[in-house]
Image 1 (cartoon, rainbow, N blue to C red):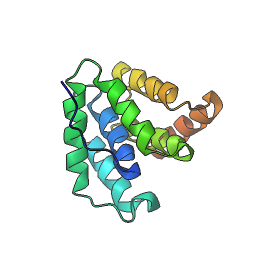
Image 2 (image 1 turned 135 degrees about the horizontal axis):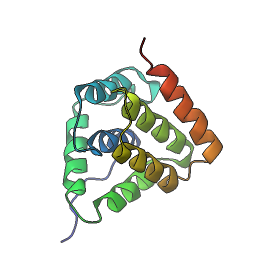
Image 3 (image 1 turned 135 degrees about the vertical axis):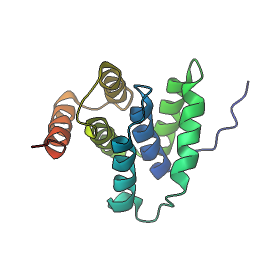
Image 4 (image 1 turned 90 degrees about the horizontal axis):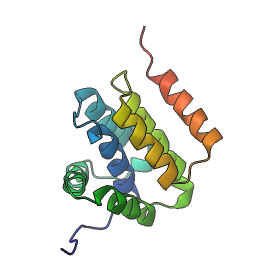
Length: 140
């Protein structure tokens, strides 16, 4: 069946990575959705992004996750849309969403490892990004 998926903009690709992390454990938590919305509303890279596009991107991610090779297709779409210099940004956003609910399950950890691999994130850089996400999401 041929794909009729819309091509991602760079911002769509970043949103898609965040949504994918959120759905990785098949339990989309409010804290994760709030984290995505907060990133889109406040980060400079999303300054000219239409917040309404988040829903469309999320629908694309949901469709892809129902397909056998959907994750591979998603990563290909992300790599096509996102300049390589923003791949670490995508990983940082993924880590922030994963850390938003205060716990990282095995499914989220596996997906983060997949994001690291698919976006060719240097291990040392990944560790620093992960450490920063953990520090930002600690509670008292």
